Amino acid sequence: MIDVSGVFYSYKKNIITLKNITKTFEQGKIYGIVGPNGAGKTTLLNVMSGVHTPGAGRILVDSYDIVNDREKSIKKIGLMPDGSFLDPDEKIINQMMHFGSYYDLSIKEARERALSLMNKFGLSEQFSRKSMRNLSLGQRRRVGLTMALLHDPDNILMDEPYNGFDPFGIKMVTDIMLEARNSGKTVIVSSHILKEVQSVADEFVYLENGQLLKSIDIETMSKNIGKIWVKVLNPDDNLLRLLQTFGSVRRVNQAYEITTPSDNKVETSEINSALVKENYKVDSIYYEKRTVEDEFFSK
Image (cartoon, rainbow, N blue to C red; front, top):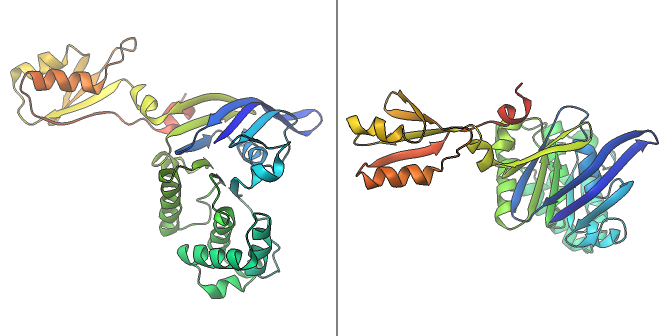
């Protein structure tokens, strides 16, 4: 878990890039950080991971202060940056073993874990003996992912994790996020590929001009559109009248679209109970899916 409270950050004295950011990122969830270019997304990840020091405010990583307990807190974090921290000319495996020492891994442990992760990500042992300069973009990104997960951190921060990957690589990254969430880890992702992030994220955080303007979970985002789709296996003339008690109804092929009043949020369970009570066999009932673009970027 990462708890951010009243955080400010400035690259230069008069240029504030993060303004009073307050947000708790809980365990067992995937968070998508979205916003226009220059909103402060990468800066926020760098401040939360200890790359930059906040100018004001507090960041706790699993109860450790990122400033006052820096050594303990950064061991709880794995950062996959959009670029790379590695020396472009040194052998990758040598750097992995050196990197592992910062996280109390022995040379043997770091080597074995690095090779295991690289193999999992589609890089054979021969790649570990190469330098970053001799790898393709996709291969370099796989190495960056290995570095982020080398010490098995409880909090994983990923900046543009899909960059440089083909469809197979994108699925691999998505699977890693889901695996981490399902094991109780906190996953925080900044990406402009919103469709992919929306397929896995539990909650979105919207930044603009260095400010956190909105935070919304996927379920609430879907409910906000106010449209529910219903399909029953045994429709009759009375079905339309029943559904109209919940809002305006439009029939589309074999399904019914219910637009609920903005001041009266209707739960799907409420509609389902009414249908079952009247002996209708419900095939499906769900909120119309609302996209991240709809929620944050549509005018």
